[in-house]
Image 1 (cartoon, rainbow, N blue to C red):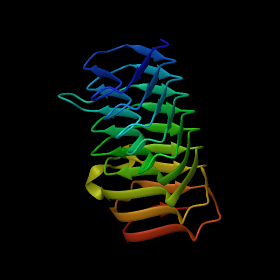
Image 2 (spheres, one colour):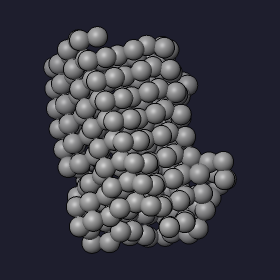
Image 3 (tube, rainbow, N blue to C red):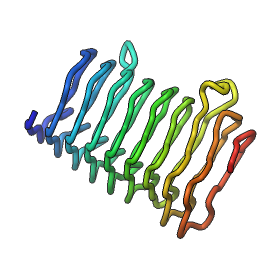
Image 4 (tube, rainbow, N blue to C red):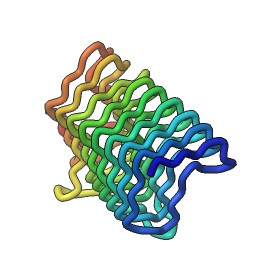
Length: 219
């Protein structure tokens, strides 16, 4: 609690395969790689931490020898990072609530490389190329968030029909997406287990822009 990490050669804070830790009110800035890293680490709680001005990403959850599962991130802030604000890689079942990502170069929030069953609710992503990115994986939920990005509020790509049935539904619902070239940009998706519904789109070229799309439900 209440620690500061800056100008380190790699990361600000890193947990390798520990469990059940709490990180609160810490600040990481100007580290060479990332601000906060959970590598193969489970059941951790990160609350009211701040990460900015990193060479890569603010907050990273990724599978090492095991996945980084069941972590909870609430009311954290990531800004001015050269990668993304929050990134999840090869992990599952984490919850992101009331976090803010702004002016990160690539994206506000990215879930990729077969990450599954994450829930993002009431988060804000602005000022990046994309607000939210789903790249492969299944069963993820983006609901009641605010998103904006230069190219799109949301990017969905590389999700195919073999990655989930009804019990692995990917859902994008009840979000407020504005001031983006496209509300939802879809590329190379062939899954019937994706539902885009009850979102609000404004000041965009198009609500949904799709390339190589098969089976997705837009309501």
